[in-house]
Image 1 (tube, helix red, strand yellow):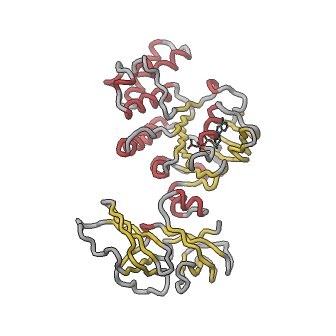
Image 2 (image 1 turned 30 degrees about the vertical axis):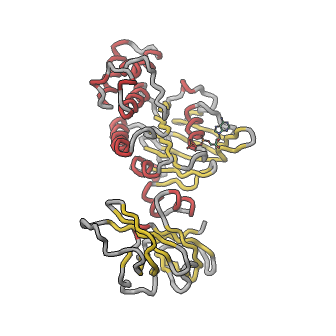
Image 3 (image 1 turned 135 degrees about the horizontal axis):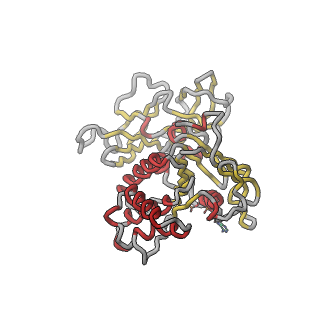
Length: 372
Ligand code: ATP
């Protein structure tokens, strides 16, 4: 499933050169983005980057100052929210407290004048979809947070919108329930074949649920791609740093060949890093090297070839996370790198300990050269 790679595919949602200002403040700046039918699309970025504003413009709660927003070819600007084939599920769920689960889900359908039998059939279908059949008579306060979240989901899906907008939908759930619910959301989205647009500042959530992610900063898109591309080939320091854990080392380019860049890291000027990558950088350019902690080997003995892609230093701290341990290594110049190592056996005493001298090495396809 990758319609964005098919030049003949027609996007369902198109933002074209959209700008939104609040007074003098530019919340969204000349932004263009296409989203395809049946996509689970995530908007990811720090607080205040404009994610919610973008979503609210699609829902019709805000209008852009400039640009066009179309859905299935129809211009949405000027169309009131209730006339758009879009529904938004809010973080607060906004359930009616005095109504039962059943009535909460039926509410919008009744308002639209749907015939009684059809309302009942649709509510039952939705209850089944979110696995809440036995809770139909309860009021929201008699439900757990996770169950309330599912009622809200059922209610927003009941009218069968073309697009469901989810604004931090799992924010109120604890970690375990959140992870379970992410998979439920993916199942429901696939089952209904709908387009979901989710706003989140949780990068793991975006990576788990989304077909594609748009990483935003200051009202602009920085990178739009599949989760694995965003993680493995971030296009900038900003994306490398925002999505996942990373070591970012400043370096100077020493040579550039097709598919291979050699750089000298500032933190270890006697070392060379060879990175397998096509790169527009030129000899002498200042760049940054992004190294994910789990792609680094940390060992007491030097690797077979310690002349490239290897740093030596002392263990400064060890974080034990159960499945992984994070080794913080201090280099002679004072910079630090962290390497993650899975705890493959039941180790309480680790072979590597505080103050040990260690070697941190990596293969040429582990690093990414960043020019911006
Ligand atoms: P969060 O993750 O905190 O919800 P966000 O990325 O969704 O953040 P937005 O809510 O889209 O961010 O807000 C983007 C910027 O626009 C923020 O700086 C916010 O203060 C500003 N903003 C949003 N709505 C308004 C408004 N109605 N009036 C003035 N400024 C606004």
